[in-house]
Length: 493
Image 1 (spheres, rainbow, N blue to C red):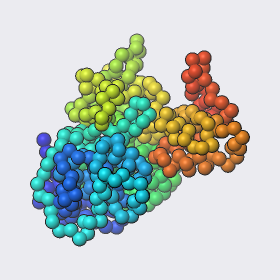
Image 2: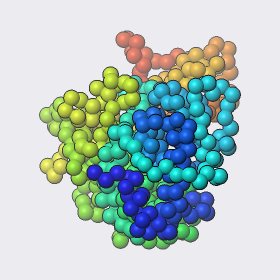
Image 3: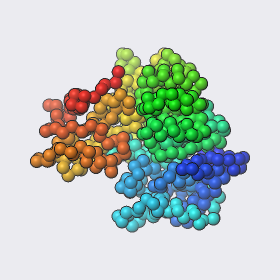
Image 4: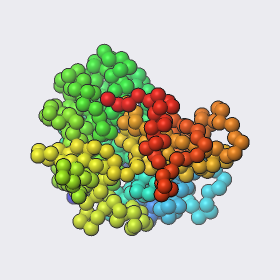
C-alpha cells in the first residue's frame, strides 16, 4: 500500500515547482514542502525522536502543522494532535500519551510549568537548517486525535496510516478530485476534517488553500470570490449561513465550484434542495461517520433525489449494519472497514465499548437502513451532543463548569438549534449567596479558556437545584424543556 509520503515524493519528482499549499499569501511548492519535511525530520532525529515515540504538535500555522505531521511520520513517530490551542491541553495530551516531545514555535509563549522531562523542539530552527533526513521509518499508528469518547473524558483515538489513506481516498472519490483542483481548507489537522483533505490532495497532486477556522459567512464568501477554488469541505451550518448572508453572491461564487462536501449533522433536505437547484453543475455530497470511523457513508445528493434525508450508503470497501434492530428495523448504526480506529490509546476498556470483537464500530446513533442500503440517522442512543457534526459529552463540560469557584453543581444538555442541530445548554446551581447577575458571560469565558469553542454553553440557566428522578438520575429532558421555554428557543421544523 502506498502511503502519504510516497505521494509527496512522487509529486515532488513529477512537478516539484508547482504550488501545493497556500497560506497567508505565501505559496509552497511540492518541493518546498518535501525539503522542509526532510529538514525537520533531521531536527527531530537530532533531538532524540525514535520510531514509535509520540510527539505533540503545537504550532501556530496550518502549513507548520502539515510539515510537522509529515516529518514526524517520516521518522516513524506518532503525532498527537491538539484541537484546543492552549498549553494546558498540549500538556494534557502529552501526559495522556506519554509523549516525550512537543513540536512548538517561539510565538506559542511557553509557560513556566513545563515538566522537566518534556523535550521542546522548536519549529523555528528550520530557518537556518540545511541538513536533511532522507530515510523513512514506519509505525502502524500515524496519529492520535482526541475525541470525547464514551465516558466524557477526552480519548486518544489511534488512527493508522491505512485509516488516513482510506479517508483521503474516499474524500477524493466523493469530490471526484483530480490534479486541476484547488480546495479551500479551514479545518486543522487535529480533526479528520483537516487530515482527509491533506491526504486527498496529496494523492491527487492538487492544491489546497489554508485559512483560519471561521464562523463568518461573509469572510468565507469573500475568499471564495477572490481565489481560484474548485471545492470545499464545509459544515451544514456555514452553508446555510452563507446562502442567507448574500444569496446572489452565494450562487455566483459557489456555482463555480466543482464539488461541495459536508458532514451529516444532519443537513436538512430543504437546504439540500436549495443548493441542488441553485448550483446545478456542482457535486454536492454529504458524508457520515465519526473520528473513530470517518467517512463511513456518503450521499451524492444529485444522484439520489429521493434520498435527501438519508445519511448515505456505505463508502467503498466499507460496511454498515444495524445492531439489535427492533420490529421497525431501528437500532444502533455500526460501521466496519479500513477507516476504523485501531483503538484508544492506553484504554482497552473504552476501546471495547466502541469496537467489538468483529471490528464493528458502534456509533451510538439510532437509525435504520432501507432496501437500497441507505442509512438514516434518527437520534442518539445516549446523551452525546452533536454540534454541527462536532461531538461533545455533557460530563466533560460539567466537570469544567463545576471547577469554577462560584458554581456548586451543573447539568449540561443538548439544546435543539435551527442551524447547528444541537448546541450546549447548562443548568447551573451557584454557591450560596452568589448573585447570578452578569455571570453568564464570565462563565462562558471561563469555559472558553479550557474547552473547544463548540463545547462552550450557548445557554446558561441558573436554578436552585438540579432536577433528579426517584433514582437520583438527572432529568435532562426537563432541563431541556425548561431551557427552551425560558430562552424561547425556536425548534427546528
